[in-house]
Image 1: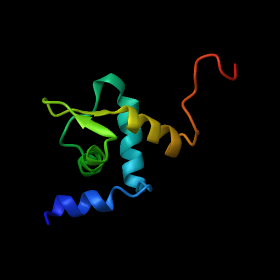
Image 2: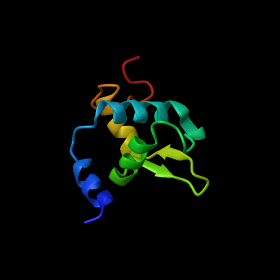
Image 3: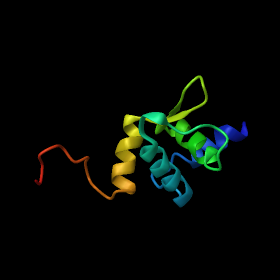
Length: 89
């Protein structure tokens, strides 16, 4: 079995490592610009790409997916669901 196959099984656990949560947060903060390849969080972004939380463009930039945004809301922002405009105001 390829090393990537082993890692993808390990990283499909419901828990995200601290480094991956941080990388996901930085990616969400980057918005429409995304994050370029070659940064220290590449391994985490590639792991999360395999989990469906991150996508990568042909130009090599990483972007958060809807699933990734939901996971960010749940694990980093500690909310059950994204806030909707007008709710709670």
